[in-house]
Picture 1: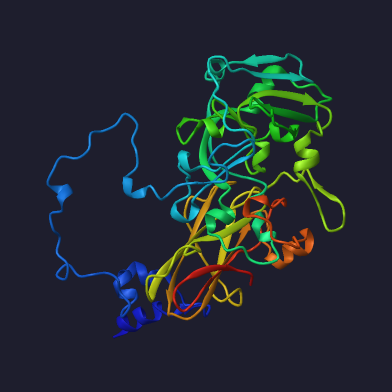
Picture 2 (picture 1 turned 120 degrees about the vertical axis):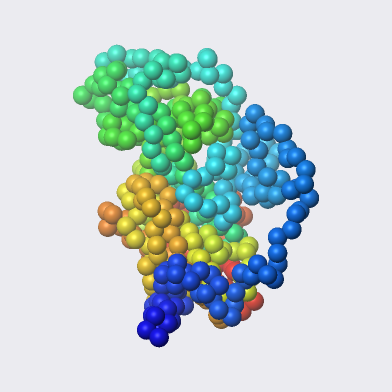
Length: 434
């Protein structure tokens, strides 16, 4: 009897949100945890059969493996599928992925004029300016230096910009938050190469330039270059994809995406920022006080729920696993809290280990949906003490738009406020402000 009472207590909801103690699932499984709502069938009710694919030889192994044809719907959405003379965006389907690693072919892309077809044998990286010995590096030369690997997210400064809208935009996670991805990057630390060239005492900045047609350039404080900046050559173990910077790109862990220059060909050390067009015009947003939000660099602590989320529908009453991702350009995620009542009450989510600095952290929480309306939210904190703001707190400082432009036309940057998903009695999920 004592054991039975203990099991019942383990199913009690946490914080009034109908969140369940995780041990309820671990001890009893889904069927035990959601008695009366179970979607798990007994073996006697549906015995295994020999399906057609079990009776014939399978497909021939390919030189480069392809995913199942049944997963073709898990794909990036394109803002410019015909490649017209304008920016091309590809958004990661985060609501259809899991874990913390973004597959190379699903990594988000922002390209001003498409991906150049670079011959790696002819590509060169020049480091010059305020250095003692200007040097040119070939791909072969870089391969001879010590390689390092690190997990790091890259996020477009304009990711989540639709949440600046005065009314909630009805789009899924991919449409709202799909300009962020996380990979294992492997390459040579920039500090190693700067040791080779020598750094002049007057140098305070470096200007990085890409080999694409617009020759995108950004100014980076030299301190970042001497810290954890990397010349990335590999992504998730293989050479970079063309649209992600092949054959080499600058990686600035935790800093906004456009500064992580792709197709890197030049780094010039200077005593001041270059004030290039991107940093003086494109990425210099005007705040409500009239000042420019310029050289802001870090992608601040952020989280959002990916499952369940808009575009999906709850498949009946019972237990679900609320899941999402959190990350911070200032360090590691320290904790994530989840709410099912629009922020009135909160409960701590489980963080998938290992939790790494400036990388995706997957969080999860068992939740029992009883069919009543709910509003799901997540809020993250990092180990530097930064807390994710509410949307109201964020727009009070940064402002919001007065009209609703097309989804891809929001000019604002660095939104990291709390995102809210409302679930109605039918189990349909939509984006709301709460």
